[in-house]
Amino acid sequence: MANTIKILAEGREFMIEPGPSPTVNGQFIEFSMIKEGQGYFHVLKNNISYRVEVLKTDVAEKKVTLRINGKTLTLQVQDAFDQLLNQMGLESMNARKVNDLKSPMPGLIIDIPVQEGQAVSAGEPLIVLEAMKMENILKAPADVTIKKVLVQKGKAVEKNEVLIQFG
Image (cartoon, rainbow, N blue to C red; front, side, top):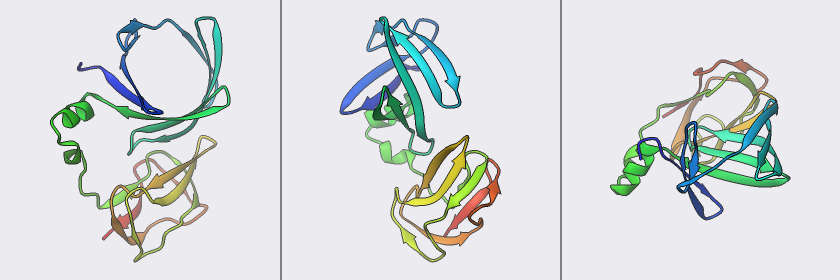
C-alpha cells in the first residue's frame, strides 16, 4: 500500500502499483512507451497504439489532463498519504493556510485575471503561466483575498518565485 497510487478518472478508480512489473488493480500491465516530444508519448498496449498528449498538470490539486487518441481525460492522483487521510476521514487536514502563490516551474506570465483587493474562491484562476509550450492555470488554493500581485503580464518567472501574496 505504501507505493500504491490511486487514480480517479471518469468515475472509475484505478489502484496502480508502480515499479519494474507495474500492476493496475492487481493485474500485471505490459506496455511500451516512447516519448515523441515535449508532452507527447506513443504507448503500445495489447497491440493497440495510443497517442498521449499531456495537456495540463496541476501540481497543487494533483490533477493531470491528457488527450488520448483525441479524447480528453482528467486524472485525479492520490498518493499513499492522501489515501491514508481519506481512510481516516481527515482529508481536510491536508489543506493548509497559504500565504502566497509561488510559480511551480519557470515560465512566462500570460494573463493575470485577478487584481489586488479582490476576494477569490478556491479553484478560481489567478495566473496563466506558459511553460514548455503549455498554458498552466494556477488556481486559488482556498478562499483568499489578493493582497499583492508581484508580477506583470509578459514577465518571465523562475520556479518558486512568489507571484501573488494573500491577505
